Image (cartoon, one colour):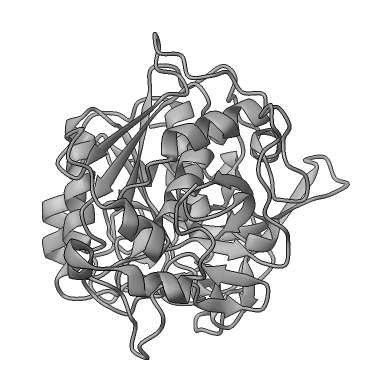
Length: 418
């Protein structure tokens, strides 16, 4: 447990001294607090919203109004009332999680260091009845490296605590474990929350052999994005996913990149239908919900044929992201144990892990194109919207392709194969 855990976040911020004071902090246009910024009643952002083109914000939203609590003494009981666990996600998306994923590595890109990451993952897995880390096959094991792919020195843990990235890291790691328990997990921790540092972490993940990489962060679009693309995101044969954003209609980068899979968000609920589940576009308010829309800078990839955007359209696919129907996450570093977390930070690692279940991408291809060739192998989301726009499909769900949910959510893994 962090030594600062009893202190409110507004007070924790004054504890940043020395080297910690050099961190680049996203304050937004209104000088918002670095952490604890309320998104809407019932939810709070793990990280401050960023309107910067260089300083990133994570896309995790914490559900409030429910009590966080530690695991049981024996770490053998899953939480109740704190969000979905592995079995729920595997059921909702018809995934072969128990039989696929062996030998695959899923990387999650983070800022700063969460020193409790490995112990928290062990508790998450044991609480949900998942096998412990298998050091022989690396199934369920976690490796943590810095943005240059080295085991040390790792970035500041104080800054991870103060600025909310420990919650983000716990969410990302837990979602990979939930979807692909046989996968190895690689957490690449950037020294700072800038697009350049986080992009460097992407390259290091690839250099270390990861074929599936989740980015649960975003910056505002800019003319610099083409440079970021060529430096960090233009990789064939690697499934790179990115969160579409949590502020409703509009796009963020790197989700806007033509080279990544842009992942929107849904509200996932149980239902008395054949599937047993139902989904709609996640939108809590005009300023809180999945992102979608037209890029102002990125060229339209050849596999996109919709006519509402002259350039790249977000999104490609989607998964659960509503913090009210979010994931159970275990975090003891900047939280108090079990909590419920959503945002498109949840949906991005889900989709990266589904790619891992589907198997290695084909050399020379962009996996973001795969769902466009397998549209019948996705659950089509046809209700809900994330704002007001024209043409309407860019912000409103419909049969077939739409902006908020792309071609839909996973129905098994067929849509994520070459």
